[in-house]
Image 1: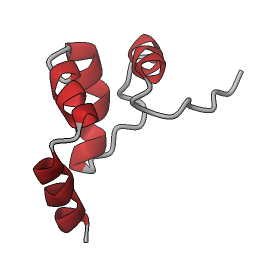
Image 2 (image 1 turned 90 degrees about the horizontal axis):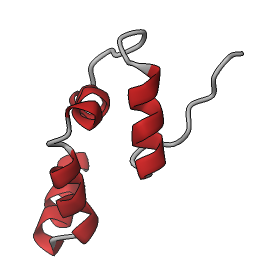
Image 3 (image 1 turned 90 degrees about the vertical axis):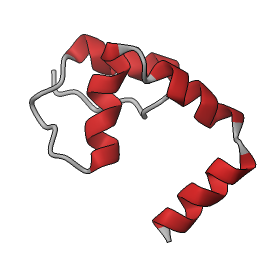
Image 4 (image 1 turned 45 degrees about the vertical axis):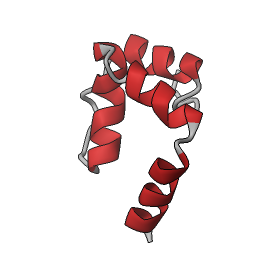
Length: 67
């Protein structure tokens, strides 16, 4: 179902997908989004400032931080 949904979005040429593709050229964005898309374990490998930047772009939901 995921593959089918992905293909459907690609064929519809959703603007947000084009924007995401452009943002993935930014190393800060790629470090956060790539492991998520690949299904890799990224816990503890991410920079807080990169997470905040990607949150500010609206690409991920804000992360609950322990203070």
